[in-house]
Length: 264
Image (tube, rainbow, N blue to C red):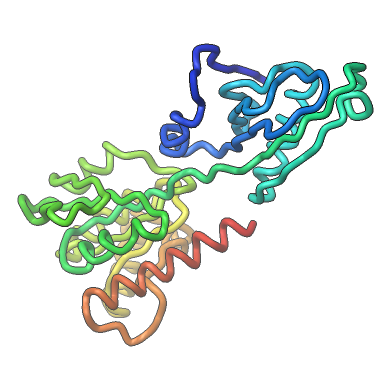
């Protein structure tokens, strides 16, 4: 197990957004009460990452090692816990102390990449941040989108394929393809389907999807296994008509995927 921590940290809570943005799974550990002699005092804080590394410290020693182990288990369960450690009985430390530690898993931001800043893309970009998604909106048309509503998103206005090279894909990445042209949709899909993601969906009628599927397989662009991972036609099935309604159907599908993954 590799253990690393920053000694110059004044207040570890100021780093929590940076840690969330990093995409790393972690757990925040806080000493909430102590009695007797203990390595760390009340208020000591530490982040534990899923590889066993840490940021901050709750005092070191056997207590810290045990809290790291418990934090790793807590991350698997995705539920906060409050644990009491008897340093004599639990760790044979002979100091007569007790420590109460609160451990809370910290979920990384869910990245949502929306390709296409048309009516549906804009609506989804407006709705999604309220449900835990950090939005990046892509479009190759100049001035197609102005962030004049104070929405929490990043906008990249350039060629779709070039834009993909600027961003990171991982197990917390959600991708929605709603560009203005079928050819753009297929180009973006052919690249994104090769990446790591939690969800990938493409808009289109059943006819469009069937033709795209056939073309991508026959041209050896994507395998059948890769295409089967794509949600297309996109979204939860209900009679959605307006752009807002279609965006809600897509958002509902992403929430279902997000919560299903969280339960595993």
